[in-house]
Length: 126
Image (cartoon, rainbow, N blue to C red; front, top):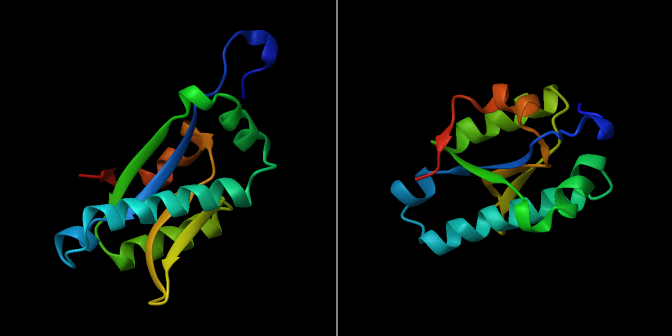
């Protein structure tokens, strides 16, 4: 972590991972999928609002950095969530109601290098 006197700061990123099969296989409307991502990102920020990285991320409102990745299906998203839990990586797995199915997850803001190793197999969402 950079110290305030060093003149550099860590790059905080909020990662959102969305199931791509919702669009490509299950034919969900694009707007509905975007809404899921918004819910997850907002929930992750809310749940970790007092976290120092979250506060720093929110303090730079006009330069927040998000990366949206795609998980191919429900199983890969659930596996990722389990791995993140095991590694104490704070996130919110968003469950669509009333169906109670996982649609996406969002991490709280983290320094990129802290969480990127867990996400390297996921591609940018298209």
